[in-house]
Picture 1 (cartoon, helix red, strand yellow):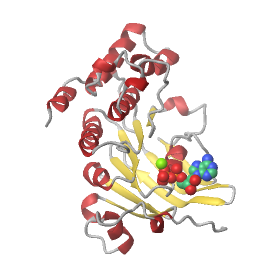
Picture 2: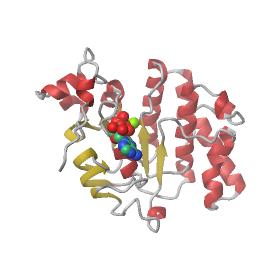
Picture 3: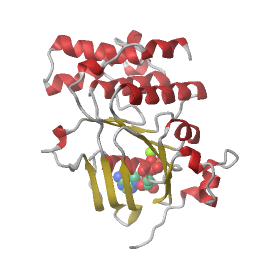
Picture 4: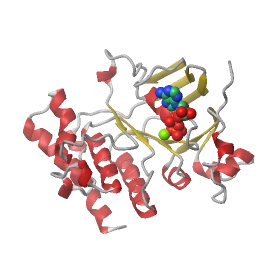
Amino acid sequence: MTAALAKFKKPDLRSMREDRSPAKVEIVALSKSYGRQHVLHDISVAVVPGEIFTIMGPSGSGKSVLLRQIAGLETPTRGTVTINGLNPCDPTTRDRFALALVFQAGALFNSLTVYENLALYPLERRIYSKPKIRELVMRALQILSIENAAHKLPAELSGGMKKRVAIARALVMEPQLILYDEPTSELDPIMSATIAEIIGTLKEQFSVTTIVVTHDRELSLTISDRVAIIHEGRLRTIAPPAALRHTTDPVIQDFLNPQIDIQHPRFRKMEANHE
Ligand code: ADP
Ligand code: MG
């Protein structure tokens, strides 16, 4: 293990949280269309509290769309999403579970420092005093080994640092559910491995349910308890990584074959069908 990782494992945020259990996520018969474009078809998934559940598929397969339905940012065309039995789109119930979304591009406020970006949510919620917020933010930065970036602006950070800041910001929300959108995109293999290890460590240290959407085979096969594969907007399979390696399904075999480019158009075919 690298020195940086050994350092980030030391601090422990658990003491700062109320006792919360990891969230249960259920997706039932979900379809999503934009006008005549049918992106997701009849997806059903039950994510077990505390697991790392990865949704894998090529670019354009609907992963980010699915994540937006889970986060309650959009309403499914058909079917339902529930988090601990509650509808994430319903503003009156949203406060009853803690959800953090780590966006692909970080979604940091460019005019705010890293510290200010992290403190924004707890300041707005007004549930903690300023010293407590400071403690929460500094410990999240410490866990991700980015204390030195506290007073930098996002524009001054590398891609890998931005991802860490985005994860630190999620931690400050003391989530029961963390959703990651392409956490390793645009990162080199070493930084990708670091992010994979961070995701795994956060699962171990906090009671949190983790959903990752990614086209990164390596990432999904290393960190996941279970992997769901999306192909042409439909769920092709859900299986633990070890079971996927023994699949006889040719589509999944191609997915897992490093010789094959899953970004190839043959995997990107979107059905413009009419249900
Ligand atoms: P990815 O798997 O790469 O994350 P997305 O979920 O972003 O793919 O997109 C899946 C498909 O849905 C794409 O064809 C995209 O153009 C389409 N799509 C996504 N968001 C919208 C939207 N708001 N309106 C119309 N089409 C959309
Ligand atoms: Mg995406």
